[in-house]
Length: 297
Image (tube, rainbow, N blue to C red):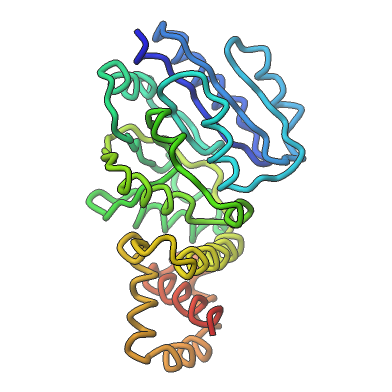
């Protein structure tokens, strides 16, 4: 029985996640094991009135934190609040699409597994919701959701033993940075000798970023990735990030000035493609590499 107790952890920023919590609560209640759902607002200013309604559900711990802690900060905070030995973690802008979603994770908990279990992501029915989301939509379809694609650890949807997550550490300087907290966690899982298992237990990502916002986030993530690597604390990062590995090779062979020049003269055409209905993922890779080379000039 002790292995079957689950804490569901959901960090949230300005998103209406009431229906997600209701769906999870219904599945957890049907399973018949002790559980809790912890939702922490990370300095949110929107959707609070509706999200507060989840406080009427049994075993739901809803917290409004006025100060924004960032993605690293929330990944550190939430496990410290959990009571139970297995933690199911997910982004708040997701949708449950399978009636056995919790049961699939519960099977691992009942066996007392000591691995990290990643459930994955799938796309919503109906295709592209609007042209302004084409880059994020295409990236998920061609990269993140594609069968056989090389997977790195993702915090989007996974379960881990509480004792493992509580051993993951983040430096104070990382807390408000954007991006690659999942990469850092993946490196630390390997250091701890904790296996990461991938199963077919997806959630749908419904909170797509606009094309402009996704490009902004990719630049912010580049800054975080370079800062993490240059800190010297994570020498394993080139093995976790193809972009960083390519960046280091380009610098090693003295090609950075040439590629910066090529990117500069082609930037308008690249941006036009990435904001089109059919963005090229190769050009998106080139955009991210070009921005990384420019940032670290």
